[in-house]
Length: 182
Image 1 (spheres, one colour):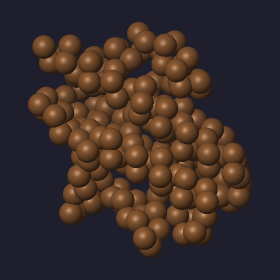
Image 2 (tube, helix red, strand yellow):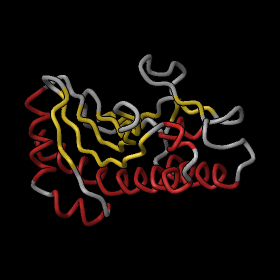
Image 3 (cartoon, helix red, strand yellow):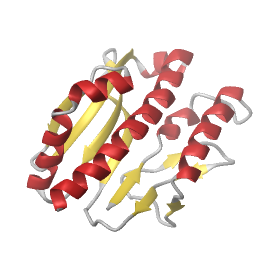
Image 4 (tube, helix red, strand yellow):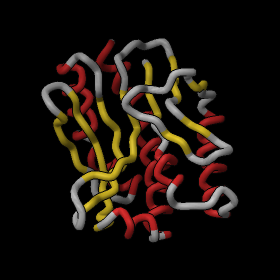
């Protein structure tokens, strides 16, 4: 299986100076997470997503390879909506070309909604993305982008929530794929 982890650190480029203690803490947490996953970076980042954290650290797309082959699933953080009703969303997207497989994965996670909600500590939502793709996400209202950029709580929420999302959902994703693929 290939899982693309698109680091939400791209949003922190605007939040902090390169020498910011909060940015350094954030980079350390994600660095440990990425190191523990034994990730390798691609030379050519995904054309749709580019994440640049600072002049000192550039993260594009990280790939985890294992024995199972699926198109891809993405852990992603992004701003959505229009001001003054903008939200920051942390999500796991099922983006396999096989719609039935995406639906089975969604069903697997829907059946575990309360367990996931309890571990992450946030309300969890499920959504169809277009015809084939599916999404599990949580959101935080940020009103405007300027409000989000000025709010320490929002920044910490983004980092903490993505770490919880990955730690909680990745083992379930691995198990679900094994069960679905047989």
